[in-house]
Amino acid sequence: MKAVLLRNGLLIDGTGKDAQAGMDVLIEGHQITSIGTHLSLPVHYDPADVDVIELDGKTIMPGMTEAHTHFTWQNSLYIQDIDFKPLEETMLGCYLNAQTMIKSGFTSCVSAAARGRVDIALRDAINQGLIVGPRMLANGAEISATGSFVDLHPNHVHVSGLSIFADGEDAVRRTVRSLLKEGADLVKLNVSGESLTPHARSEMTLYTLKEVRAAVEEAHARGKRVYTHARSSDSVKICVEAGVDIIGHADFIDDEAFEMLVEHKNRLFVVPALNWLVSTLEHGAQYFGQEAIDATGYKEGLEIALSNMNRLYKAGVRILPGGDYGFKWCPHGGYARDLEHFVKLVGMTPMDAIVSATKYGGQVMLMEDKIGTIEAGKLADILVVDGNPLDNISILQDHDKLHVVMKDGAYIVNKLPIRQVQGA
Image 1: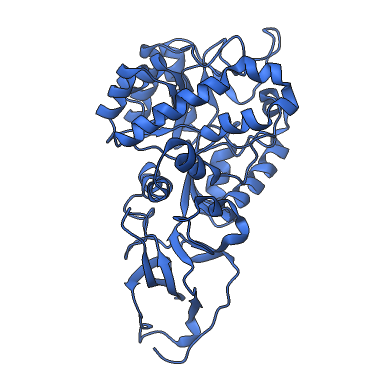
Image 2: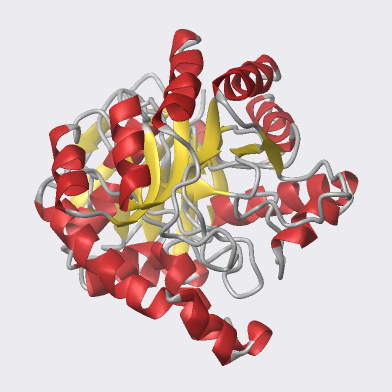
């Protein structure tokens, strides 16, 4: 069994405790086995089987979790591009996106929907060691109502794309059962609209409480969870009342929805996907024109979202990074930008932003006992960062600063010298 000793790092362990300088971390096989200062090598190891990496004060932190992942969104300009891209090319793109994600320091991810069974096949290939990628909770196609924001093709054109359209409780139940039969870890419902689609804007609620509750009942009966796209206040209330587990966006919540989220903060997660709004406002005009971007109301929507996320954060609701990456103006690889938004726009401390991506990430992955923090006995999903993200959270976006990325104790990236020593 191989061992790795990381020496003399600044430890941010993901729990929220103050960073500790001069710390060593010992990894044996897949696990972290010891944390402290001036650690000795285990006597039962042949020195040739121990990699010693001198960090010289670089930051050691847990691998991060991207909680709103769309690997099948591949530099698309329009939602229709996702529908019409051949599934074979989509699968290859997913493989490349998975590599990009883990090399970006995100060693785990929660899918927020995909085309067909692509996520499921990708997850299985990663778990079998056939390809390199993050730990992954796989989703299937989005479940959407007729006339929703992803219902974009003329009625006489039938496309098997990113969504399955299901109207009414029975149809929703049948669709959830079908997706879980295929091996999905969770299912996704589009409960509200999205303002890039004029006929189904963000403020609109597109599913009823009974329909959402039907999905939750079917998923929970099988030990699975429900993820939702819910921007409107009414859609968020429906999600909370129905027992939804992960709520995406939650932009336009009113006081009643806020109180409901706070009341249920110990069982649910909110993933605001702020970078979608920020990047669309920054870059969308070059693709759609400024008039079209202004018509979305995203500028006002972002201000509302930031105010509400600040309130939720201060109330202790678990808010996680995940920014709807995969469109031309919001490309894969920039995942850590969400942490910068959390600090600079929402008002989180840098430490709390890191906790949201690490400790909360382990929780949303249902692996809190195994990942998310650097503690003895946990799996060695670890980053070494050249710099201190508590001083500058944006360095996590600089892939050149990610000197080591480990998953399960194995190197995904290592830019630092390794040496073996004689004796302990």
